[in-house]
Length: 365
Picture 1 (cartoon, one colour):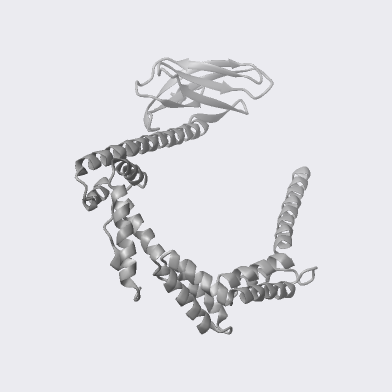
Picture 2 (tube, rainbow, N blue to C red):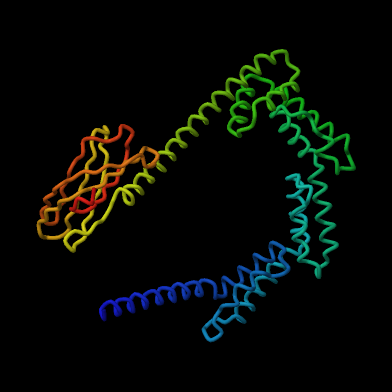
């Protein structure tokens, strides 16, 4: 008992030491000048005026080499340094240009400029807007969107895509329509139809919705385009369906193997007392389901003869119990070994079994 208590104390001490070591490592990672400054710069760059990253220094040991106040000071340094970079006309212009080119009408980058409320925010927002409109309403963007719509057989949507634009609308529309017509001429080919069929199947989109876009093609070979699209779509879809089926079958097989292993380790394995000692038995149905085999394990050095009655329970392939019966056996097992006995009669739909030792007397029946 003393040895057991001592072992528990050692294990407990090791656990506490590991926990302390882990916490100490985390503090070393967080409680330093570089990490604090980095958190400040991240918050400033993303316009987080509430400065949430500063809270991460709250657990720094005030009695150690690096305190919470040190963290706060270095965090503020990083925050202000990045704020100086953000609150520049060049940054506002770059963010406006990027949002415009990407067609982000909700201007996600503009919200980050709120950081500059005390640095001439109105002027920076004006610069942002100017660059945003310039990029959003650029002929290059109009050409790009026109090509993309045509390549996927989508109808032209200039009015929707460029609704915010108020100047040079006719020039933009001309650039868009020209690019759309040229790209549509290239898109309405058998080769492009095959590519679109492949891509749409890969994206797992319904065939009919995309095939309907072929109405935008003005060429006379629409039947050939539809056939090419359908063939490519169906080939890709079948390949994907086959791959999905294989993965599903593998997952089902893995799940069944896990269930079998769980059953064998639990239900199929029993322990029982015999002559003041405990023994184990494992029940298994043969692969051809022609017999049941019960292995009895003797983990002791002495030979033992185990005699008596056994209850055999049978389970189907869904691990549902079918029935049970009894058998009387005498099993002589040498020390440290296992010995088996077999039962040749069993239900035809039995896939698994459980063997329980019932005792030696007639009442065991």
